[in-house]
Length: 407
Image (cartoon, one colour):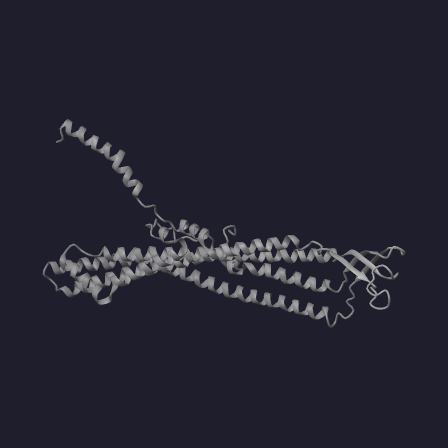
């Protein structure tokens, strides 16, 4: 039983540790890396996303000037300059010689300028859709890299936990490892997962210990919602903007059948004995041969639109099929994981205990123990494989749709 002074001393030590030692330990404890944080870090560091954001800014800058009139043109020249006779190269002696200055301005129709603006906006929408698609892809790959590292660590921990305290059982596990190379494979898998995660979030963040994973048994969107909104999947998002772009291309090609006009104004100065001149010219395009010029262009743009529509339909079918397969894989893996947790792992553990008890009681040899322990290791490895399959399928489904597209 503690004496009163010893209790006071103990309390003083605890207070000292709390005020100094505990604070130091807390400060040195590395921050855990969760899946969601890894995804956020990858989005801020991915070079391809930065490049795509630059493409959006370029398209937005181009869209600003798309509906503007073309720049005016300055006109400077000399008309009717003599090249022979006594007035050769004189600017003042011949009555027809004029020094001219003026400007010219093209006036595309308002409808055509509007279509050019829509065309440019379609480019912005296409680049924005590609950014969303790339962002979803980066998040998916980062999540799967995090999952691979987590599962590799989980597998190694599970197998290492089987190392018993008794020397006989330890030798048994070492025999299994030596025969199958399991330990080396586990180390290699962990290193590979670490390298994949480093690619997305950098070495410093990837080296942090992992936090607990999210709930891989629940999807953020229902299976029906994922299948009904295939057209909104990240990889398919650019198609809608690409169709708009192609449609405005067709409208612009058709607009070429309607002429634009140009205005030219010039002031001409002649010699001191003659009057100065003002000239005003209007020029109008004459699309007289549409069947050889404008119509083939329209047909080409229409074919391009049909190509995009066919590619979109094919992509939607493929994504619907792939999504269905991923959903089936996730559901099947989830059922197998639950069965391992509720039945199989318990059964293999019980078999090991029975074999050990029989061997320890002198009622059997070592072979049943070896067989039971091998079966337990294989069962745990298979269990972790199902954890990995379920988690990777979950990540694939989790990042199919943008954040705002929820049921």
